[in-house]
Image (cartoon, rainbow, N blue to C red; front, top):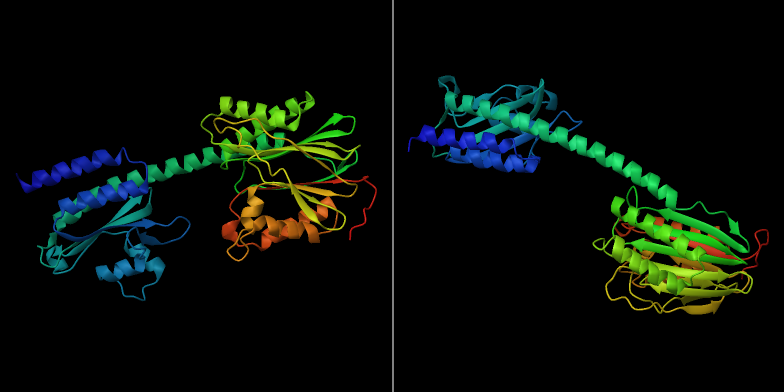
Length: 412
């Protein structure tokens, strides 16, 4: 078959593909493959793409810049200033054996869209291969124009997607602000302090307190698997359902059982949710707790000793074949501090040097002042000191204390 016809078919196929591709990586792969066939045998086919916000062109293959490229093309030396190197690459080049005779072993063509260089195509023949000619450079320039337009559209579409994502995240933030309550510093005889840090713009942690009368308060803290908009929306539905169930007088174990059904029905493909639910009677100090795969509750007494409750955990919400949730009861003494957290806290404290994160958390709670806000500050300070690689999950801390709002309990 005629070589020119083979090249024409390859270039026609590339032109069709460029209109369908939606990522720079796909464009690079298609261009390298096609030009490798058109100008075979080649030593290298490369794309140098413009870096956003920087007057530089970098190779998609190995990160070399414009200065290196002009050196290879023979149009500048290693000391060529970056801006001068980029300016030189605005023109096509054919360099190598005898460029004055219209032939060479390496050629480059700029991809210019609306007056701006978005990249440069480079083709280099093997040492044992025939030279490239001016007609080859003309072909490369035509391809560069098509590739430049394809890159322009891909980047414009990416910008549009980023804008839509930012709008979606803003809507999710509005939703999250609606279901994460702004709690008062005290509810009856319960002091309250909260801390919430999403790993991303929005997260899947949730918490809530509902006063149901006669000194009784219902509490929930939970963690939706994953982060982002989907997790935040599921968390909002769970939080709303909790408020309804709490006001209807259900016990913690009953609330978790009903929330489990709600998660299965409303979000069967959204993974699972861990949660811990408490009923606190501030008049008697009796606490009922039920857990759905969540972390235990820490209780610090006035001597600084810490004990764990809610260890008899059921399966997370949404996990198939969930059994009934067990309910534990314990007494909360005057001045005791009760701490509920999500996985993000213990994951940040879990290091190879301190593999027992719950023990570390217990020590932090024990050594802090016996006030909710002081306990939260101590926990957050420990998280801030943890390696950044461990701080990849949402963080929620809800701390309560049985004490009059204007009373100062005496700690050890």
